Amino acid sequence: MQVIKDKGNVVFIRVSALKKIDVLRDKLHKAIDNNNNYEILTISQELDIEIVKFMQNTYLSEHGLSRKRISSINHINKERSCKHG
Image (tube, rainbow, N blue to C red; front, side, top):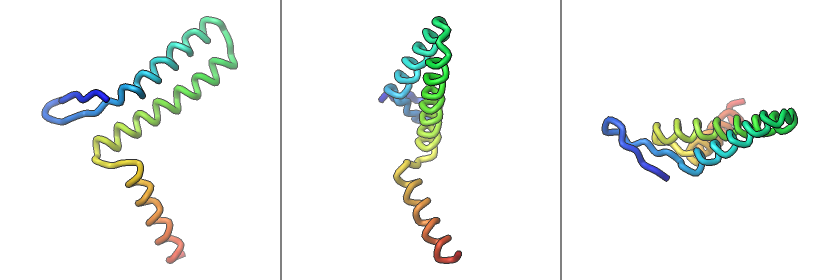
């Protein structure tokens, strides 16, 4: 993991996630060059998922949240709705 300071704020960049996105992007370009429609679709979908995960993790990190905490909050909210529903 790489840490970058920006205007006094610490921004964490998950290097492994960025590397995976770059690898998938390279694979996508090769599939496009080879005109392989099935590979283009498959890799494009996988790339979309990785980009969304990265964006979610970045958002959670910037707001001091974690997936575990969000999961816990969702579980509590489900329990409350079941009791009141």
